[in-house]
Amino acid sequence: MISKLEGIIISETPYGESSKIINVFTKDKGIIGVMCKGAKSIKNPLRAKTQKFTYAYFHIKYKEDHLSILIDVEIIDSLFSIRNDIEKISYMTYITELTSQVVKQNNEEALYGLYKSVVLKLNEGHDPLILTNILELKYLAYLGVGLNLDCCIQCGNQTDIVTIDPDAGGFICRHCYRGEKILSPKTIKLIRMYYLIAISSIKDIKISPDTANEINYFLDKYYERYTGLYLKSKDFLVNIRKIA
Image (cartoon, rainbow, N blue to C red; front, top):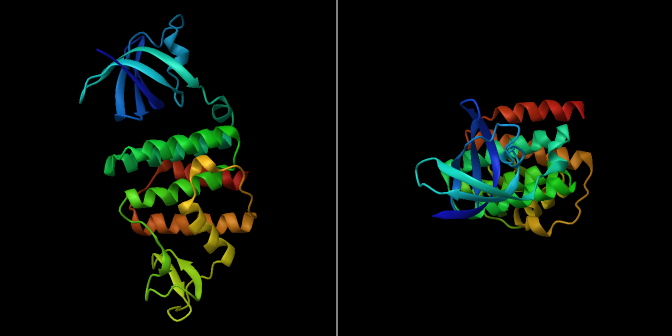
């Protein structure tokens, strides 16, 4: 029986002389491995359709817990804008590696929607750092280390918030402040907005470089402190941002 699955190719590996295996993050089955027979052959139409970071409908012979077999591909979007821009491909590589790690810990169907929404917005040309930080914030709950963005993490006070601290794990009010790094009120407001916003509704978010860097600083430190994830693509992304 042939299944039609929506998904995005997140990796590809050569197999033999003419075939390859692709890993596809799908809407209905999570991340699955698919054998693409003959897809490395120049004359095979599947060669162009099975490139990494292709968004498509995949017609496959689905086998649970085994490699599925690819029959055909209907491309929805080749994500050309991403694959032809070094900065975008660097962000895409990072969010894909991050997503793979999150899925290993929590395979909820909602993760596909979050990932796909960010990928499509990235392809449209929206700010890659903002999109990445929004996704990082939303993934925290699925990693079991979600933020409390309603009140002071120490005492529950909902007013007089002076900063948000990655080590404490949330807002710090004036009464509980003990010398933590002060982040700007704009940064505090935007972190909460990032957490709540529907990615598909994003039209245009413009913030100052200083604020963007503060938000990114907070998330880098929070991930380091609470998730235990170390991703090589993150190191490369940091270097790309230094050059940009």
